[in-house]
Length: 276
Image (tube, rainbow, N blue to C red; front, side, top):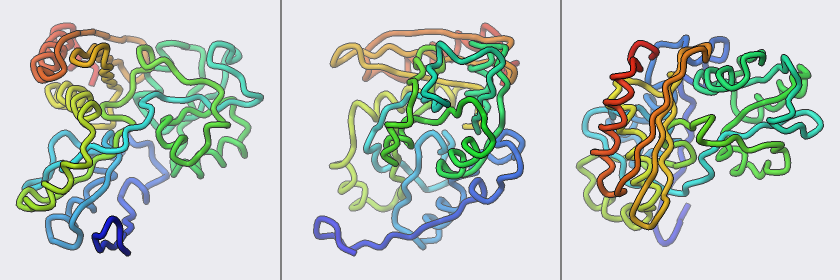
């Protein structure tokens, strides 16, 4: 196959996270559920680059690997797909809501303690089919995947990212390469989305400071409020959403490490590490 004059071959992988569908994600003790197999193939030279959903990529990468580009940013929010197009604000009491995410479970329960959260695993097509077959009231997914599949017509509500705070880097694709591939890194820089890169790095830096993986009840969301400034929120909860800690910061986007470190320090002072 050739794209823009470059010969390439697409190689598909099935990861551990794709194979283990009988357990909730947080019950599987592996921070690289959806990435380990691809990183191993990069290291041994089987592939030249790997494309990840950034929210699934651990903040600590495998040795000798780097992110060459942050590309194709999509809507970072979560969405509600509900029977009869019911909106989030009008979900009935004790509604059964399906999700595969511990973060969504915790944040949704914090907003609506009456909800019954149903764990559902599999790719988006599988989760949608299970929702339809089981008659659950609603299904919560990442807007990015829904949009990329052209399912916008199924969305009944977009959840407020300041309330149901997304996973760090949600909606962004990360192209990972070996750190000794200088020519490839130079090529990928042309594809890099600057605003998405700075926002995603800011969000992921908070998570790294807290020492967490991608399967914990934690969200971070950075929004550009001017061409230079970002506003960011981080939110952490216990698994049942009974205790929630939220902090905000605002500052220059090119100083994201300082902002993110401040945000993490404030969360830690408020007891965030005891919730993770």
